[in-house]
Length: 248
Image 1 (cartoon, helix red, strand yellow):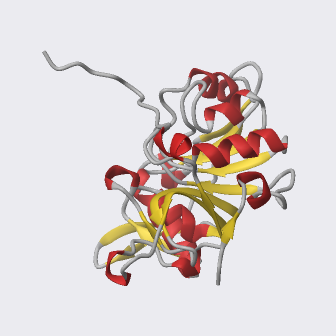
Image 2 (cartoon, rainbow, N blue to C red):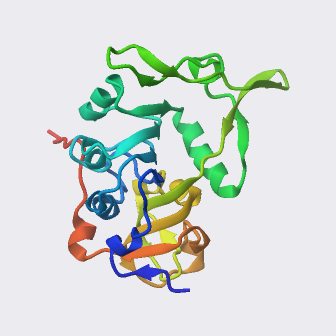
């Protein structure tokens, strides 16, 4: 099955207001920049986003955030983005914070058809006990707080129940892919990308190079990918760096 789509806009043609997205990447590493820009150009709003973080000011998902297109975020890290903090603290944005490992497993579980699982991460904290702010009021008070989760003991150890995550769409970026949707990720970009791809009912992958792949080198099977967008050399080379450091 040839899953290659001519443009990012065509690959996202059926996205609607209020759609939910799992988005790969960690900071600016491995983020699907071209698809995020196409989503911005489409003009949809009220989006729910599940991602490790929400980009930076002016970069990645931060572009959608600054335009007021995102209404809810499930993430494990919300630093590096002042606009994110402003929207959250003023009640414009609903945010579900979850431990990073739990978020990764929630995406993987959703993609595998597992509705929920138990983990020790978060036991004895507001993650399990409830009370984390999901939405603030304009005056900074907590308008909506998280509810307590089920905690169960196994072999003398307490575990909290976490739900698997599925989304309407997933956006990911891969270094290489084939026309069947099999993907290979490069180094640090193999972070949340495979997991996000698994969680989406419709997964769109932007790939830097379209090629034939040896089955033994595939990181993500094409069964999880519905559409492939091949980047131009210029798009493939356009990669952001969050913090530049210079070695003395």
